[in-house]
Image 1 (cartoon, helix red, strand yellow):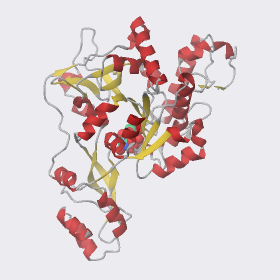
Image 2 (spheres, helix red, strand yellow):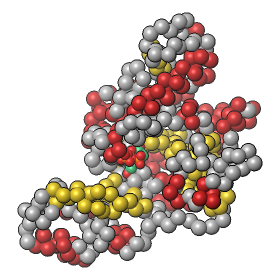
Image 3 (tube, protein in one colour):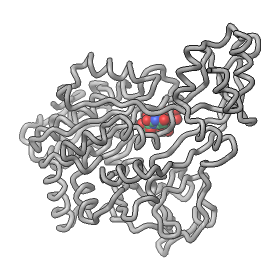
Length: 452
Ligand code: UTP
């Protein structure tokens, strides 16, 4: 059976190993892995079909709601609308945490990293506490859906169990596992993994939509009356969870998928930008943005294409239903990577292979109506990607510290350099929240301070 299936999909080199009863392969693992592979998708990818092609077409910058809109009267109306949606139980959260955190060289889930300035709370704890604080504020539970992948699912569940779900109800937290994709060689051959199966990787954050549908959780949300899904990535401790302004604007515009952006730091910043190509909103990756657009200046000398995506989106549940039911497949992006495998004598070696991943933002062009909201980077974005330098654990800690200091400064509390501060989401979720509780703050801050 196994041998036949392998031959059918053009993988004679592995079928031969099965036939020869090679000691370096595990029939059980091979069967499991093959069970996850859709033959048609694999054959298409080997033939170069279904692979992302950068769009050619008429490029325009998107309409962006600017960051200072947040201080207008209209913003107040939109914010109240968003707050109503949360109070009515119409909002759920999807956090993607299935990545491998390879740049950080982690063995466990990235969400377990201790990242807050004083207490070193984990990303999982920070996000859970934000949801708990919203639940208390709006008197309504918010379903918290966490996407994991094969290699970190058990550890992630265990982490939440061991920490009593950080105060959330067990019935409010849902885990779902994303799909896997096999890597191939340049010749289209599947690669044996060191445990005797196939070398597979999680299918990218774009796998979220299929996984939500397949797990039945999308249907569950529908039954609960949830029609909006707030999407974010586990590695951003500054995420403004279920931002009511974002929710309100999305609904006012009757958008199907919305995105938050920050202004690019400079023309060259390596970030994907939102653009409109042939009338469709998209994220154009840095490597796909042509020079003429990358360096295009507006009248004030700023990049025309400056709406840098921070991977925070809002989805209409009905939109996800529609694109998953109709079977619109997101394209796969190819990346050439070093892949650990074995040679013919079973010795560990690394070879160059092609890894396939789907990206969530490729759902944008399927939406007829989108909304793009600009926010201030220092208030909402501190990604943890690298071991050192930019977008590292250290930078994310210092950005949180800076933000908390700025809130405290508004409340008239100046914190000396060298002192660390941390404000628990359970004390204040944002600056306004903190200002409303200013009387509870110490008048002088002379040592490291955690406010709960
Ligand atoms: P990244 O692309 O930054 O990947 O994912 P990563 O796994 O965190 O780190 P590297 O690239 O291996 O160093 C951005 C977000 O998307 C999630 C990650 O968990 C992170 O929250 N993600 C990524 C998934 O959930 N699944 C994937 O297949 C890929």
